[in-house]
Length: 227
Ligand SMILES: [Zn+2]
Ligand SMILES: [Zn+2]
Image 1 (spheres, rainbow, N blue to C red):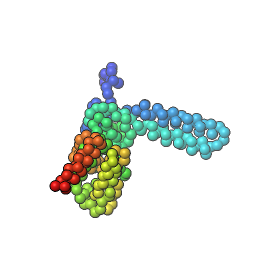
Image 2: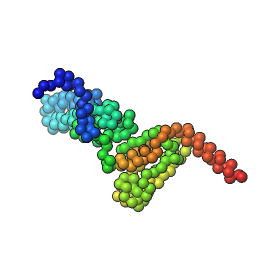
Image 3: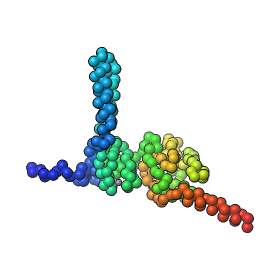
Image 4: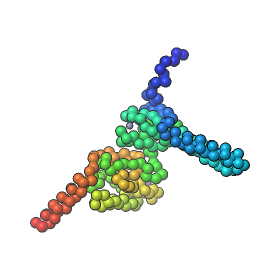
């Protein structure tokens, strides 16, 4: 077999199969854990020298965990837009696509459509959406986590730019925390629900616009009631 002289320059993952790309170790992310790991190992050796074998074992074990954690972080091209992603196992955000990709066992793929997180970890900045007063909620009457028939709701309430918002998010009896809000970001458990919400409510949102519109609507309502 004749190897191409510049085969090392071929970007990882360009020939990826089934819409996936390969990922290599991200040294920028792995550097810090490696430094900590070296410090842990040095600590373990020092403890061993001073006859503390149990402590040395614990510190050495911690060092190994930190090292493995650092080496599971990798870097590779987004399978959709090709921009470089620093990935850790599980869902990873692409800032250019505004979508999640999935990383496992050296490969980055498009997110699994039925992926559900244990807690609301899938983020959707409100700035990528229409104003909250215009939001449409996907699948009315269906659980925001599993899409089964909803039996109850959970209140999602927040105040932004002086406006109070309150939504009742449907849930089945088995699931909770389907949608939460924190500092201008909505957080979801279900990727399919996250995606449906993003697509139905895509827009750009300026807090000032929303405030202005609500104030104008209030004035119009007052004028109407005086007629
Ligand atoms: Zn992308
Ligand atoms: Zn459910």
